[in-house]
Length: 383
Image (tube, rainbow, N blue to C red; front, side, top):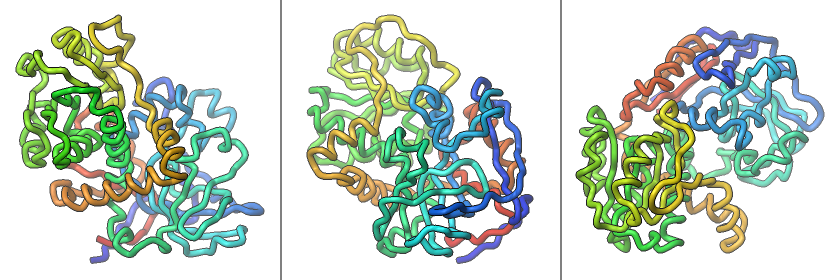
């Protein structure tokens, strides 16, 4: 089925949404003339991208991990604290000065919140290439890889929306799943997942729950408003509502995967479980404003989980790219099974994006909503 969507951005101009790195609620719409592709470069039109709480996490850790550096703003704007939050998106090549990449190619990967951008392809292979722009060479290659989707199996081309919304997050779910398995679940008898209604959270819960070799109890923690949605997913053995954490069995060795970034919740769980908290990994920030500096807590020390680090370690064992391939396979399987529970909602134009970004920051986007965004004037969606 094909839909034509009309928006507010002229196809002949560049439209971007910039975010203040010191106050994520302050944004500005930036319109400019289209950039041109220089020697060895391509210009792409970004026609759709997913928007989730994961993008808030990118902003929150933008300085510490470097997410602001993938598509930097001009020097003066950067000095004034303006940045571009990256997103997972699909795009078409509309101009090419690069041998091996033709106009009309379809790409998927890490892009800015924008209608267009310029890439510099290198290490070109049949199904992918690396953006080798000089300033990006110091950044993790995971986010510099662009997939050439027309060379991929047709089944993968059928899941563009899910790929933008779910696959990157389920990819992180798989890396967490593999991390737990590699460590024999840290001998935990129950796995606690904070903000299990987040896409990375319920992706991890489902992978663990559906693995017959995993006998640990899967305990999801969420808000009352998301109770029915998580129950419908069927991925938890026990669902606990915020404020009712005393329902968690304190006698069991527990591994906590924190998708919420809520320091109060982490403190409550550690104080309750004590030495039975055998692992505590911080991943997401769906409750980003509840973050802060933690005091020393009982049990395992909470540590930040950096997915690219685990991927690099596994790739040394399995071969380059093997971890992401396994993650893609698991992610597409889970996405296909759960896609009917996610209601795709189209956000068209920069002003609507500004509004929904504010709702996302306020944690007012229901877990069942799948936000797909375009800043182009007219584009075609295949569903």
